Amino acid sequence: MRYVLILLLGIVLGGGTAVFFLGTPRAQPAPGVKVGAPDPKGDPPGTVVVSLDQGFVDAVLATTFSGLGTPTFNLGRLDGPSSNGFELANFQGGCSNTITLLPEGSGVKTGVQFRNGSISAPMVFTGSYNLIGNCMQFKGWAQTSIQLRFDQEKQTVYGNVNVEGVNLEGVSPVANNFVTVFVQTAINQRVNPLVLVSERQLSLMVPIKASNGTVKAAAKDVKAEVLDGALKLHVTYEFAGVKGQV
Image 1 (cartoon, one colour):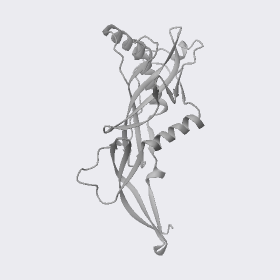
Image 2 (cartoon, rainbow, N blue to C red):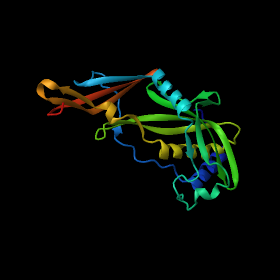
Image 3 (cartoon, one colour):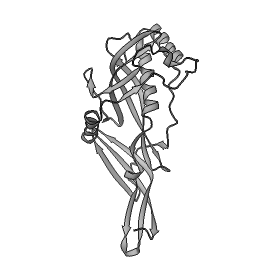
């Protein structure tokens, strides 16, 4: 994402007004612990490396847009009354008050990028919002970053999406502050935390008929290696034998 150069006065007024009407974007506490990098000395015993390449992720996103329709977030009432006592629904006035994610637009494609040791996700969108009786139409794209987190109890790898900024078409630069709050709030309430690898995908179970039992493996630690075009998860397991479950 590219930040738009705006006047200092626009930054102060735009950002202050957005927070005044909408409040500070709030997210649920991120689950688990932050996923770090693998040990350069090598993985501990019992570690499995799972690789996700760029083509796989792109195929999933393409199917999402073509088969499931464009995701739309309703912004008419983000979280009830704002911290300043304003009902956001009171400003709708016939405006759709939504943000819709698009597969592409503004010369950008929505997708996840593995590059330079980090995970980023350009998100193309269009939307509208009624602000003090005026319906503000906007379109553009947001640059987001994704932080990986591992919840050992739930055996799940999450992605926490953070909006770093927006680039709008044909809208006053001051509106960037409002739209940034819109997009971040929608992601906080509708997307975060994003389940990347679920317990069903992470857990292992190997039946041993000769012993009338099963070897179960639960992930105890996850490390991530972000390469150009690929994400490698280093999953370290602890094993336990269970009798009578084949």
